[in-house]
Image (tube, rainbow, N blue to C red; front, side, top):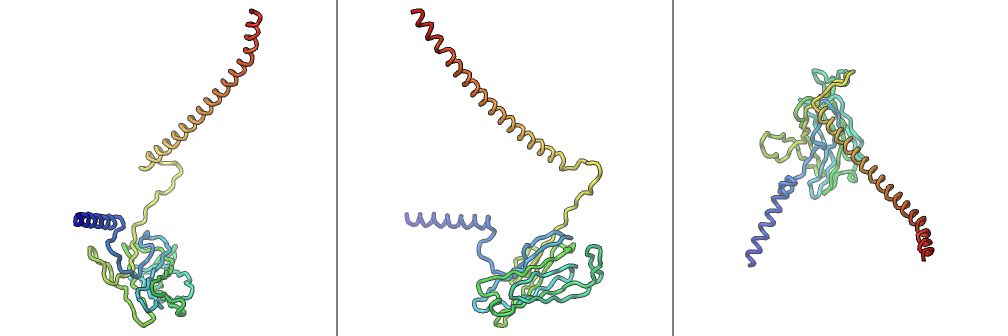
Length: 257
């Protein structure tokens, strides 16, 4: 009996573990690494991103972060958000052909961003993380941007998050932050006269359903109000009839007697 209970318990635990893996997408906690959030954006657009830096050391603190922008995917406009207690420095490089930004040609782009803690109090302590926000755009027409990163600790150690993802392969030991870019959705040009579109019938049907539902609710409410009003009026009329006819009937009975 005990063995049976243990077997049932093991099966339950295994089942819960399988469900957790299917729902949450993990079977065991993965090693934390420098990442970018959000990790997906549209080509040609602008976005606000944050490089998230966890501290993996048990004793040392993170004092510097270096982010290298990909050479094969230059970005014309890159700006940083101040992080309290940290200084930021940028390095630039020339690009040929120039990058187009709102009709202007940009021949020099940012190639590297370095954040440095001003003191021990601002450094990323063990068991904590820090985010470093940036704004970038227009995002290039590539499938992904790989941002190689160097994380420096207070004890002099440096972790090189520079491994690029391999198609169909396992995650490398020190993966670089990756921003996945998807094609921008095309929008139809406006015209003077409305034209039908593939989504128009479906939208019209939805609008008709919404209007029909609203009309049905309105008619139902109106019918309920009318019914209640009729009931009240009927009751009042019945009461008046009782009051008007009651004494006369009683008088006729007395006279007949």
